[in-house]
Length: 170
Image 1 (spheres, rainbow, N blue to C red):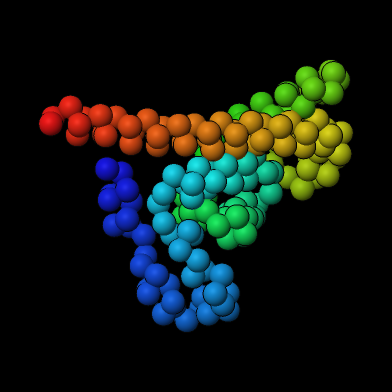
Image 2 (cartoon, rainbow, N blue to C red):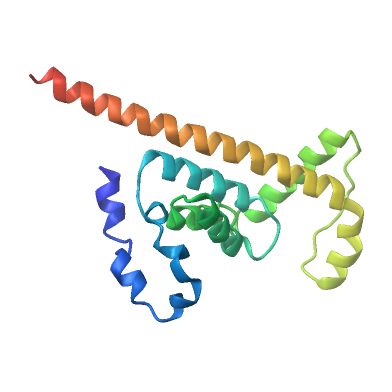
C-alpha cells in the first residue's frame, strides 16, 4: 500500500518535537492529523496543495503549510502538491488561468510578450491583473475540488477493492 512507502520518508512525531528550530511553533506541529495518512487528511491536503499551486506568489509553500496546519490536514502532502506549478509548468498554467479569466469576464485577451523583469511586471501586469487573478482563483478552486473529491473517491475505491479481494478468497 502507498501509505507504507510514504511513511518511510516522513519524520516521526518525536523527531519533530526534538527539533530546536521548530520549538517556536509550539504545539501547532504536534497535531497528529498533520502527519497521519488517512482519507480525510489526505483529501483535505490535496485541496489545500492544489489550490495554493494556483496562487501566483512566491510564498506558495509557506501559505500551503499554514493552511494545512489550520485545517488539520497532511502537511507534507499539502506542501508537495504546490510544486505542480514549477518553473517548467508555471507559464502554461498561469497563461491558461489568464485565458480562463478573460473568458469569465468576457473581455478580449491582451496580446503581450512575457519578459522576466521588474519593469515588465510593473507595466504589463497592471493591464491584465483582473482576469489573471480571477482565472487563478477559479482554476485553483476547480483543482482543489477535483483533488479533494478525486483523492477521496480513489481512496474509497482502493479500500473497497481490497476488501472484496480479501472476502473473495474465503
